[in-house]
Length: 270
Image (cartoon, rainbow, N blue to C red):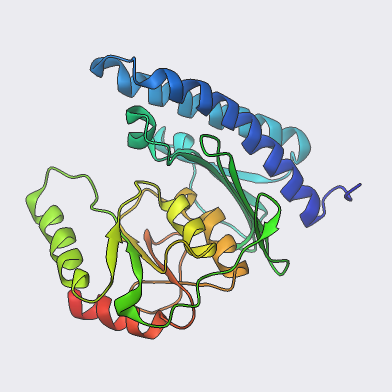
């Protein structure tokens, strides 16, 4: 039995919350393709809100003194200021476009920061039934088995994950695609998953070697993934090479062998 208020207890509670939310996501996912276009946004919003409410209610019952930041509450004008207090940072559905299209890279992400440091992370993909977990200082796991980042040391043999942020502003899309075009000459191949949290977890388990994203939604996209990458022996940093800031909407990740070359390539591609 884990001790109440211990990091193991926080993790176990987050896993339970993620699994319960996963049930809602799974049932919505398999019904999503039948939804008419005008109803897609409603379905996502409804499932998002239902998941976030379930997770927060569950966590607040256990830890009434903790603080909470969620994507849906932030969208509704809620508080997203990060303090030193234990703070649960939740993305109820990461990969919403994937969810609507029935594309199976969809997850719930639950991170806990203590003293503004990502300390516990849970990312659960209920469609593929993959549960990524980590506690700071205790390693990272996929379905209970330890995971490690790749040992690839050559940029040219690396698999890169990036995203083109959906935008109707040509300048934003151009900047994003121009950077990717430049990087394509330096890596083996490119993947776009549509989920920042899953990209980070796939760096952690070695399916991907490099990942970067600028201009994503907020700390809920990276709070859980950050601790999972770090505990799998990976590095998480600002694309400029500076220290990672969970609130900055800028993230890059790789194994330690590739960071220097990756940061150099990112700088040249800007």
